[in-house]
Amino acid sequence: MTRIYFAAGARRWADYSTHLPAALAEAGVQAEIVTKAPDPATVDYIVFAPGGDITDFTPFTRARAVLGLWAGVERIVGNRTLTQPLCRMVDQGLTEGMVEWVTGHVLRHHLNLDRWIRGEPGWHQDAPPLARERTVAMLGLGELGAACARTLAGLNFRVLGWSRAPKTLPGIETAHGEAGLQQVLSRAGIVVTLLPATPETENLLDARRLGWLPPGAVVLNPGRGCLIDEAALLAALDAGRLGHATLDVFRTEPLPEDHPFRGHRRVTITPHIAAETRPYSAARVIAENIRRGEAGEPFLHLVDRTRGY
Image 1: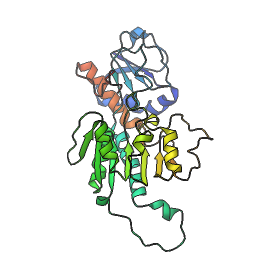
Image 2 (image 1 turned 30 degrees about the horizontal axis):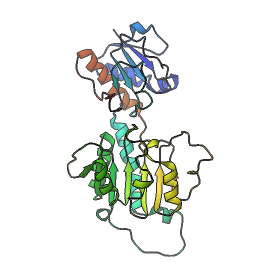
Image 3 (image 1 turned 45 degrees about the vertical axis):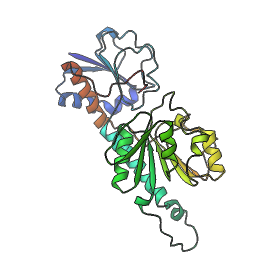
Image 4 (image 1 turned 90 degrees about the horizontal axis):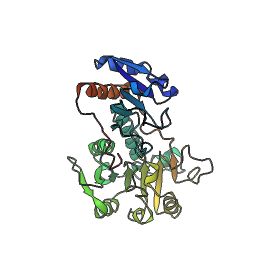
């Protein structure tokens, strides 16, 4: 019988204890799930999340794959003891959550809803532009970025997509590389960052690139905290060059109480909730990969160690 070590921590097991066995049964996988440190030589698959129960993967010589519960892998991909295939979480529920967060905040800033929520005095009947008159830049065209771009384009926003390497997305104008990034940012009223954390994306939005944005542009970051140079972002906001920043991820989490983002009139903070893994749907992704492993089929969502995601 296949042996699965759920090494993502006791708190997460409380969420998965019903869903994962049910998903395995639905996938036709006969398996034993253990949650306490087993004999490593008996483990076929490891279900893992950062902060879980393993830091050294060396003893797990029989394990066919490490199956992550997070979309991001930057906290594990550099672990030199992890030589087994690593699969990241790509889950429809997670994707839907990200699309809803991004769409909600794009519409909020597009319609200038904060003005009315704050209850500005007076009777101002200047209507916002239509979506087809607003350009949104989507930095990152992976699973999440592509889904958000398609949804926003479906609402008639002019969506520009950017990625580090050439990509095409039907109905979306795309660009790549440094020159493409400048072209995209210089046209964007709203920019969304949905890229993985890698050495190449560290401080992608620095002072120089933030300066490419039109005056009053809005930045949304539900991707990774390291994508933005925080000091440069604060300087642009304080100078009034940027209109607002809505941020879901940060270099330090939880965000310290004395951080300059807190209480800043041009910054909105959400506590890393844009795309949460839902145990019900994530368990099915894990079960499908185990079924594939047992059937000798390729794993889904394998991490490319050279690229870091």
